[in-house]
Image (cartoon, rainbow, N blue to C red):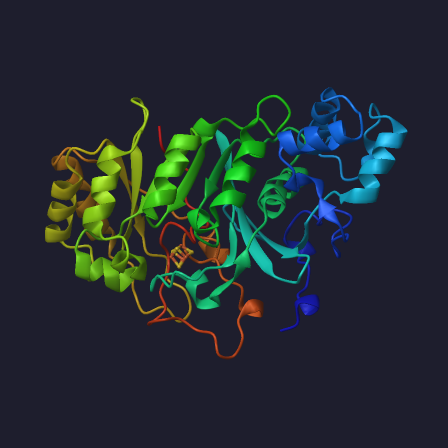
Length: 395
Ligand code: SF4
């Protein structure tokens, strides 16, 4: 299907913002960190405080053009306009779930598409963002894996998912929590993810979302995981899914590079603040990793790590070769962990009627005839996350 033929599903909910349809050429200003913007101003003999003014327009007041930045001098606005643009993606489609979840399909400048999931709850609004178009890590349960890796997203493309979704919110609604669990492996695109986190968490002139409300999920790329914990204060979630080396390698090929043994050893030495816990995501696949022995082994291997476990019942999708375990098996697994003093919660899927639930993010328009799953495609891990009930994560 040609991208341009994908309908904008206005009947599903709010009409996409004006401007949807094309991305202006030029470098998005959202790509610049605070220091880089200050340096740009300095090179023109302009004071650094202008950087805060410009960023506040961009990230707090959600300006979509330089013209509207009324307290910025006209000459400066014109200079910005000659070198930069605002915006790096457009809303291609929105799908609304009966449970209030909204799945955005964003189109990037080069035609690549990514999905972002908006999950409203009574006490918070969570956005699940993507960091890559597709993913190259080939987890066998994951729909996104079927796309392969198209490319890394830029800092601006990550930040703009949040800005666009915020612009679509009702006036009194603010996105409060972020989970980096959409398409892609955030830590395989470390610099852009790190840069986006800086903009998103900057309380002075960025978006001002607290790092305590942000969770970055990874399959366990150990060097980057350590960097993330040293350089940021966000919460860490790790897709585990099995503590048996052979089974985990089957589910997640990355395990052949960073084994369960190495991963858990690394977790024991990570600089996790005292009041925080590492979250382990455990996808429950019927008949694969949901047995009593699996639970006992999991609890034994996690002993001594300050952590909690999120149990995610598999979300079936077309073409998947795995199944969701029956409810009593899911409950029994959780109880078994809790009986062994491991904090465990079962995640309630959100948006599964619009394929926005955990692990269902996949866009057919980006998959060529030769593309396909590495194995009997199934999906649902924690990256490639999509919607789930936004239990308190991390700390
Ligand atoms: S689960 Fe995450 S890391 Fe694995 S293939 Fe899917 S998007 Fe990539």
